[in-house]
Image (cartoon, rainbow, N blue to C red; front, top):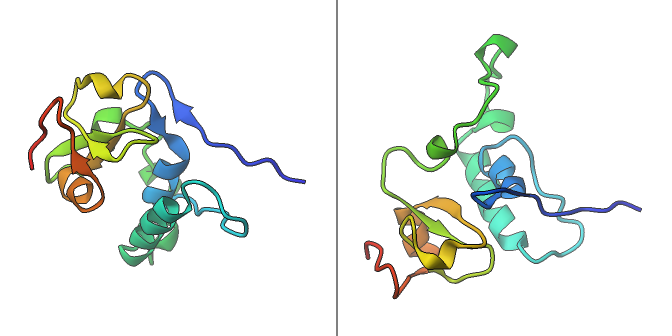
Length: 125
């Protein structure tokens, strides 16, 4: 028997499992359905098609691997970043009260495709 679990980083609520898949360092175990399966499949396919890490043609040497992850650099650097929660259906600006329990960085472009804007913090449409 194998126990699988979700891991969230405190205090920012980063969904660690999803971030590993999104950056191409791992893949989701999808033999059995789970709550966030479609989200994991989406980011796994995206990592694979863009040739990230495990899926890249050339693997970096150990001296090229950056050992730490800067939480500010996790989102897409070329465009505005907003945040979603683990269970919500809206995207938010930094500091929104709706982000008290979880705060997952996502690019504005991706957020618009999957979520609606929050009515409290009025993020960019």
